[in-house]
Amino acid sequence: MSYVLVINSGSSSIKFQIVDPAARASEDPLVSGLVEQIGETNGRLTITHAGEKHVSQQPIADHTDGLKLSMRALDRLGVGPTSLDIIAVGHRVVHGGMVFSAPQLISDQVVEMIRDQIPLAPLHNPANIDGIVVARELLPDIPHVAIFDTAFFAGLPPAAALYAINSEVAAENQIRRYGFHGTSHEFVSQAAAEFLDRPLASLNQITLHLGNGASASAVHAGEPIDTTMGMTPLAGLAMGTRSGDIDPGIIFHLARTANMSIDEIDNLLNKRSGVKGIAGVNDFRELRQMIEEENQDAWLAYSIYIHKLRHFIGAYMIALGRVDTIIFTAGVGENDRFVRRDALADLEMYGIKIDEERNRLPNDGPRLISADDSAVRVLVIPTNEELAIAQKAAEVAAAQPDADRVAF
Ligand code: AMP
Image (cartoon, rainbow, N blue to C red; front, side, top):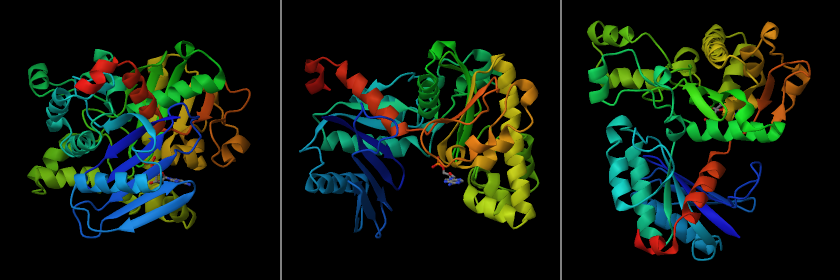
């Protein structure tokens, strides 16, 4: 059996999975792991394999330390690179800028090109690069492939991709809508076509990735024609801790009148806004509990969240003209039946009707939640970004002639 090691490297953590790229979406990975508190004295490595959790605690100095520790632990469990046939390492990279519109076999030059995108994603790309550099050192004989969160949206039509700001300034500073969560939007739109047994090319879809970060996309024949996240993942829907779209004038007002620095405003809009900024919590389970206890702030936060969601669903219905499917995915979308119900309430005149019984069923794989007489099929499709990354990495690796495998 062949596997792909999937790595999602953050600034103080590394998530990884060992995935069979031919697995079904609902299957658990062979192994999943998490290195936490990198750079701290209370570092921790957690590996889950065959239903068992293995936790070890020790200081983890840096990403090199973290990945070395992980590979040794995997080998001890008999599921490491020395015992398994690992055909590729797939790296999640947040920002591919305008350079990367497809998965990319990683060479030294590609690493430098990803480095060039750092100004567009100063918080994410450096950590992604750390993971790539270390993994290539540790596993030099395996092809490494970068999979970009932005790539799915590289072909957005200009009217959706460009902002109405001065075009010289925009071009100089690479300002445009890049979109994020692309691997997930692509994965669920394809999975929906499979679930319905319809050709992807025949479908107009609205995909709603509602996790702690959240975004919506309008997808025509498998290609996105619009998406809510923008140049950065701060745009669009109200989210767990991010504001989503706001009047840009608010930023000038905070700088001029409240004397906030740019970094303070950045922190405010990314970390202290959204549902958390209003209700004090960003987990929708806690938010629901508070709503049931008649907490007014929780109700307000929820109402704003739903208002923004409906705003974009309406916009994308118009953009697509005809809608065949609306797909809910990610932590909130897969689990919160209230969000699904309220996002699509009272839209019968547009052919959208949720079946309350179907909607109430607990999370259990891909499923239809619309009524039989709903023209639009409303689906819950669990996303599986790691599997999608594994599939893409395996494909790129398989396309490499053997000579290239030793040369990169
Ligand atoms: P993600 O970013 O996709 O991992 O989603 C994480 C978010 O999903 C959490 O912050 C929660 O708000 C939400 N979530 C997870 N499980 C549930 C659940 N059972 N019910 C409602 N919301 C949930």
